[in-house]
Length: 545
Image (cartoon, rainbow, N blue to C red; front, top):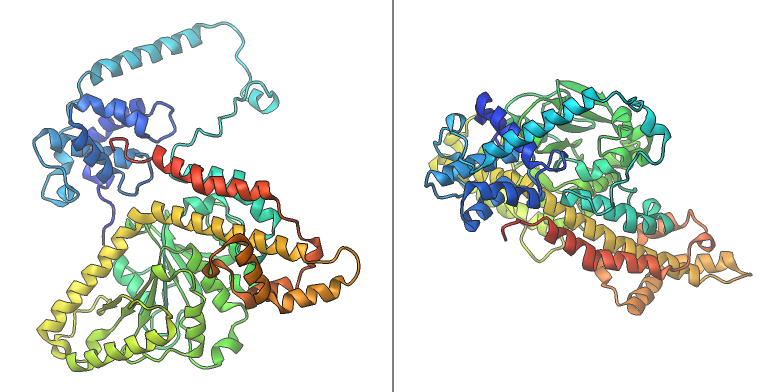
């Protein structure tokens, strides 16, 4: 399975050198990114129409990051070359039989003269520097002098993700820290949370084919993969890209600032001993990270044997993931109490859930029809939504489909369903930036409501006497207090946190020590949602729109 639109290997070494020189010239601030302003100046030399350049940018920046890296720049240049040759620019043109490796670079009017001039000025600068007899400043000087270091202005962001990081640190994080959002709802975000690759989590009872599904997509085995009819995967395994094949223990991953798993330390050492990262060099994993989970067992056995908060961990991953696949087996359609709790913990992430009926070639066509009906009935009782959840039917493993059981119609159905699911997975990196914005806005709204709740509880506390009784009364009548806040600030009821969970956390705190409402902080978050984020998206949209 390939996701990359144009890997660098599709371009000859000779052309890569040319494109590297062009990229360095177009990248005016040398940050490894070509933003809209840089692109409009550089691409104008191609003499293509505005509508053609709009399509070129849209295809090259398929992830909608608001900038072009070197890979995306090569894609853009190849598209420009094809457009100059008279080809119609469509999203499928790169998947056709075009020989991209031997495709000549596009004609850029006046570029060679500009490159020569730029090279000459660089050489002159070096000569002057070498001929200067004045003492050169020590390399360590910037560390000790305040004047030599020039601070970058806060608005000098070169991507949507950079903009979200800045907005979080300036406007949302102070609100979260003040009202202890990280203790009640979710840990504070780090840079690695924003920069992480899109994640896909697989959930299901044991032996429904979760590990086999990942192995099938990768086309190879990965470290820590155990497959069998018994409950083999006894830990959470994150399968991600790496320089070589290796397994990294959970405690090591949790403290690695470059990985987005610092928040898992709140679940303790018992969980981290059952958590590991499996790294493998693979083209698919450069775009997507997979999370393989332990099989959910039936009955009470699940609850007593776990030494950590299983549903809490699932809920944490669900908030971070871009897609959640619930896998079922035709012979394991019952949804146990534990599985019900796991699905309930996905609340608020319903749009990410997809259901996969795996190993469907183990039953014949008539039985499959009954199995599908039974699965939809079971899901209808657990997923409390009026819409019908999307169910993919197939056999996601490396074995050929059992035609003797399903017949030619079944085989054709499985192939179409597999194509649909793969198309859903291929779309994930393209939608990753939009998903980040969506999750960020969702978090900002939740943090604002949390601030209203905490400050309201503080306001209801007496100034002097009877604080313990007042706290007990507020904790017991939390539903009524939520209703008061909802009416006072005109907030939607669906955005409020789970009452039981909030009450459980609240019992460990003294309400009297909470902060009062700070309207300036709330206003800062409102301004961020109403003005800053729309302005950020406007600045990094397609420059030809």
